[in-house]
Length: 283
Image 1 (cartoon, one colour):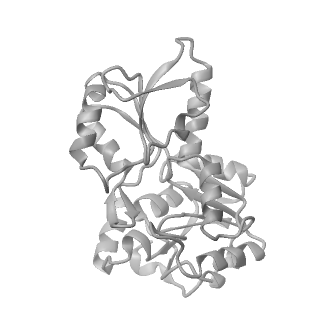
Image 2: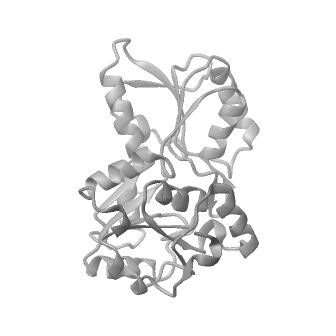
Image 3: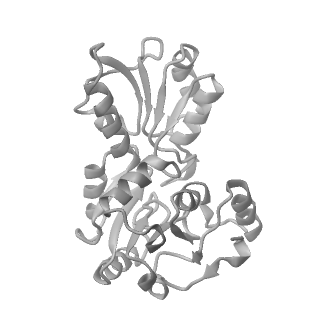
């Protein structure tokens, strides 16, 4: 499918009957760095009232429960989604399995997060370190790219990358929406780690782990009866295509000011195109 073949729709009500479940991105679809988009909470309720299973699928380095609470605090109606699944939750589950099976004792983790959030390693047999020179693992859970330049992270991570320390990136997004506008996200820091010679295990959209967990939660439905909604061609649309799902691209979020030519370039670059294009998350 090409960009020209994607069907433009005015609202989700036009296609809701085609699907049993929806995987909905958070940032750029439901909200931005300032708060909820107008009408997004009401649209989520209408979709749920239509009998659809709904998972909020987010490349957030924070765990599911914290994101769930935050969405409700922002004014979204609790119960209008079935699960808030984050890449941070997927990574925490992976690390829990790995640390439980390890025989070498507590490992030191260089955690890169936002607002000094330590929840990505809470409850795990990991000790936080600020020093890449003695880290046993690097966990990239967030970015403060609106506060620090990329050179700040280069100085922090270079000693670990030089030693070949494994790195998990739990937020593959390269760009994030902040109150001040766009800034580089954890995915860009992960790219930097690779540029410094380190190896990265990417967790979240568009990679398989997060979709496998989401579809398992839904009871392994027929993939073509599941629709993903997102604003990122690289993450949401490509991830849906890799998992065999249908998809809707909303033109809010990171594509708000993109031209048709820029969207075509991104479709070609990532080998994915949506089934539908929606101006914003409305019914």
